[in-house]
Amino acid sequence: MCDEEVKQEEEKEEINEIDQMREEIRLAEDKYIRALAETENRTKRMQKEKQDMMRFAVQNAITEFLPILDNFEKALGFKDQMSDETKNWAMGFEMILGQLKGVVSNHGFTPFHAEGLFDPHLHEALEIEESDEHPDGTILKEFQRGYKCGERIVCPARVKVSKLPKKEEENHE
View 1: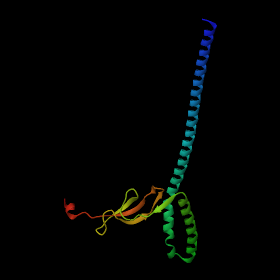
View 2: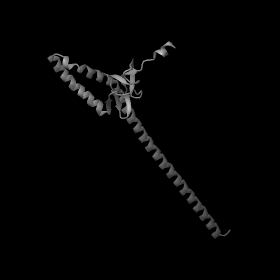
View 3: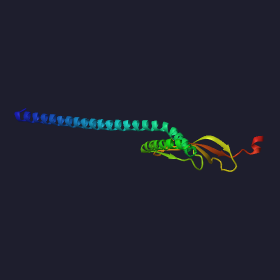
View 4: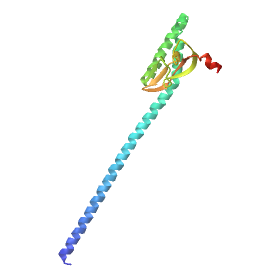
């Protein structure tokens, strides 16, 4: 082999080495970009999970106070039957009740009243009363209102539901 052929061979090897190095650099850059994207996605996912956990923790805490809030409101419903001195106290408690309702509302909780027909997704039946006067499954009385947070039911309304009486023929069988 002459010097020129050796030179050409060496140049080809150098070009191959350069191409290999470029490919290695490209692969390293690709791995780096993927790792960076993965890290950013993991960080975003962890932040979202943290926000969700905090939101659900607050919702669960508020949910525990909802029956107390309703009982507080029911107790103040007897204000008209109180003495004048007690009515003054009741006015202060009404202000506190208003503040509590504001906190509940600020966190996205909205009350709903039970009306119409029983829906197991919205209502919890505490009592069933046989009645010919109402269609089967009609809500007769609301013991405690329900609450939603967004579209999610966090506290079902507690109700009394009508049921058609059994026919006497069925009782004898």
